[in-house]
Length: 451
Ligand code: PFF
Image (tube, rainbow, N blue to C red; front, side, top):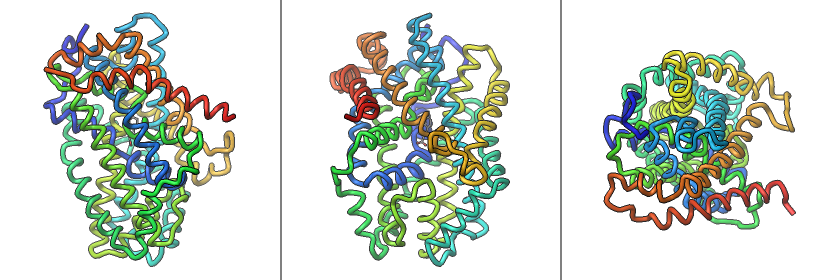
């Protein structure tokens, strides 16, 4: 069965697909997570490892996921089931749906924080701080406030569910059309502000100067996990989005656009945050609160800061929503395609279950802060398991599946079905078959057997 044999809906246009896939990729991973992991893992050296992971592992796997999706026209489970029926390979699909489940549970919490900051920006509560300590205190009070956190978490999940209920074309695609260009303009503007703050250069040095002594197996694992997370890979979200592609798309250029765009946004965000971190006297190692403490301090010290703050957090919230819906869509598509549920049923039931699973993550910074599993909060455990293990594992198995089992020849044929020539086919084949699986395996080995 190939794409087109079903009534699941398609993207409205070629640009629509690229924007929606970029909408999935660009999100909290680029703007909230990337800066804080770079900050915690030594700056420039981490950035280089991250870029290597994008080129050697992320890029080939993204094209593979799009290809699997377009070929089968199905969700992650259905895709593997169609190509190799009743074999263990279908397990990759299940693992992906499960990873989507876990990721959205904590993603919804942080998405809620961004909505709270939109409201706080409108009421001008986060653009008049006299110091970064004051901004930190404000954020601390917010994330320890159970009801407020739950309220915004609920709102975020409700919004994602409302959009996904309307389906791909009506909901998802439209939401992405305005966001992407607006986000780039916003980040460029903020970058100029950050770079012109006194003391900014120290941050630029931290961000761009690689100190290779900082690279350990753990750092490489985190960089790789971040590459998967940021590109929405390893769990079938891009298989799902590819399944709504009408057959004439050029998959290879779509892959390049999405990867370049996602990487550009993350790199730009680093140039916004690090100069500012050093200029306002904060530590880059602060963790999940980094962006929420640094930026309001910057907004408090710039002309039109209150307005800029509203715009920035609104864009961040939208970026989070366009990623959240792709996480939910991957889970929901499985229940629609494979289990025969209606879209509404799937969204309401699965959305609610994911929401409930997110509650302990939401409280991990407040009443559940002392509840630790393996020394980590519930939030950190879910993030760590999904982002650093399930996604790379899913990605590695996808690479092996497309590279060796389904085979690059078949995949190549699907890619070239409507394209004249796949220019970087040889590179793709090589990194997909050899580099990507071996790289992921080595990183796991180095992590578990450090000697
Ligand atoms: N790529 C998204 C981000 O960077 O925020 C997060 C994400 C979305 C991860 C979809 C995985 C996924 F399947």
